[in-house]
Image (cartoon, rainbow, N blue to C red; front, side, top):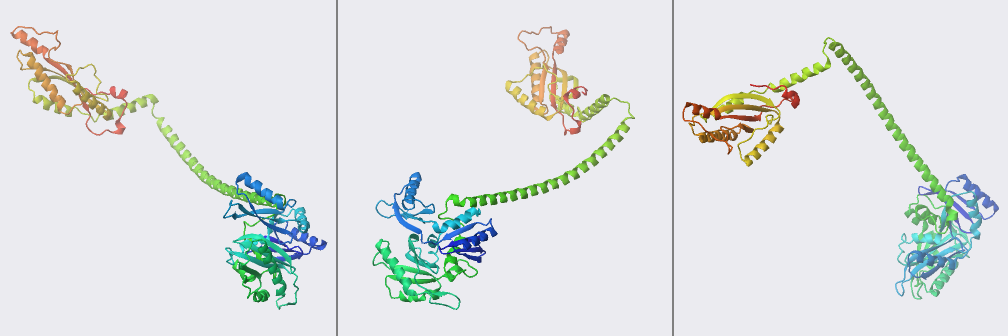
Length: 556
């Protein structure tokens, strides 16, 4: 709900606007009784802001041109224009109205204000003394710019005539939607009769004389050309101003239109009737509907209580938002608290159950007189035995026998077998292979180490059937080693001892008898180290660390 005050000089009207209806209308005269009643009216709802709409004869309008500048320079130019026309009045305003098309293209402005605030002084003092929030002071002729699009006259030169009280007649001239001049004349015509509905009837001749005087003044100020046809729009009840339209029907310089105020109000969204037979309700409806139309003239000193009201409302809204947020957060915390209570109850139940199980296990464990270290060692030993129980030397012996069958000069004397997590458990051997073969062998060893457990076999044997040709024995041994390496069954084939000593400083001597042959055979022995990953899937439960595995070797 919004509260609207309308001051026409000879009276103060008050309306309440809510939901497209005017209500609670009141009229106050400019005397002591009227001021007292007006104060009591405001105090009935002291926290409701008010908007003051004025239509006073003291209001002046001046069209002027100023240089087109920006920033601080523009503010200085506009302040100078305000001081030029309204040096002592604080109820003043300046409006930008576009630029000139020719010349320097100066800025067109309209400087308006109340040259004398004597009429409004007492009313404003009452509002200020009672700390009533004043939205602003709004000029009725400036509000008239909002009516032009509704009557389809915003792109024409229009003389808008309206009557807000029985004693005055407002005439405002608009050039393409901008106010250029407005005058409030005393309406010298008197009521000669009244219609059945209480609407006054006026003399059209007296109103026509005022309109012609205004048109002559506009032409003298060069706001209208002498031969230009002007659009004359009269706002009011059609039956009242019908005689005026008939008088101007033959005038070629004026195109007269009567715009019914009730129809225009309904077009704006009015649901009820206008509060008075005049046009102040129509302009007040425009002010109440437009949120951006709050002030024209009132300075900050008059509107500070309204700023406090807005701040108070903002604080109330913020407080309400904080309360709602706090309520929501409290509900969320209560919900979480109930969940945590259930979780705590479940946890206590689980703890009680686990304590009972622990007590039963403790009572059962007291039957064994073994220290914890002994139990740990036993479990570790059993795990190690389970890990190594899956390995068997049969596959390695079968693959070795296949290679030995193809080399009849090779005899196997001894063979030892074990498992380990490192295929380099017996270091110090030297390989009879090239550098590239050693590099490939190292790569295979790394891949096999990543696989886990290895089978390691140590083979001792000798060479036969080579006669006294020891070089043939060495070549046969090389063929045997290459066959083992290329068989694909072993990740490492290391030579610990070769037949005969191949160093340059070593020599071979002996006779051709039986003693020399025995010596050659004794020196034609070799020793090999074979390694390959253990065949079969790895059982996770049987894995143990390398220290425990080294103590659980199986030797064959």
